[in-house]
Length: 243
Ligand code: PTJ
Image (cartoon, rainbow, N blue to C red; front, side, top):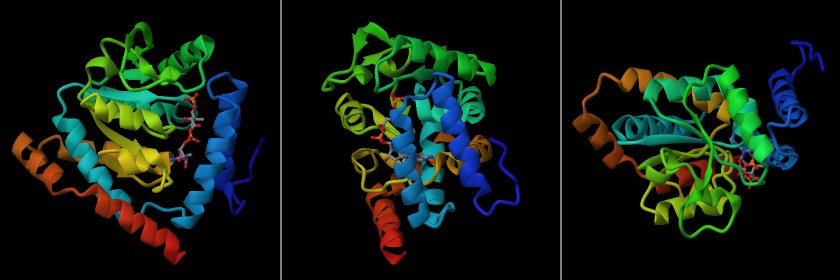
């Protein structure tokens, strides 16, 4: 659909188009449309902008990703449709693999997501391997790649579907998420929660990582130690109540 730039909700409609194209191209699950609608509702409530709570979380996330031993970026069908170029850019910047990990099982969609990311410049795409599993999880998301999530210390999981964050943490990993709903189980259980739209969050995270690249480990460590995710979530919930 061609959307006139003058439309008052141009950005929102353009984003919807990306998700619809994702479904049509076999990258995004049809359930992804519902997940997107839920995200839109929360975006309305936080003012459709990057708030200070998201800025602070993004700074802590940048520090944690830079200090990671083996960071891995987990990609589902929604993230791949909305921010493929940024995911490829983040992977390059951190020298971190992009691991396809989806909730609704489909070998075909996994391959399509990897190809889609490669079209946007991704070099380090991984697929799950049925021989490797994380513990405490029943869904398809338990299957991981031995060079990716299996051995990761920090996993970046934008737009997660719930119980995996908890499982990753029980497997000894730290989790950074981007989720517009500060009340979701993922938002509540993650180590760092960026309550923002993935479309705004990714460029900001990339910019902050580029800026922090010159900082030493000690300085980054101290930023991580000062960060309090509970406080950030409370600020996001307060903002929603206010609106
Ligand atoms: O590709 P698959 O099979 O792995 O499926 C992916 C989805 C997203 C469909 C699946 O993980 C799912 O059903 O997720 P949920 O449980 O609906 O949760 C998605 C979360 O992402 C919700 O808390 C939404 O508020 C949030 N969300 C949706 N759109 C955005 C978002 N957060 C940030 N930016 C968005 N654009």
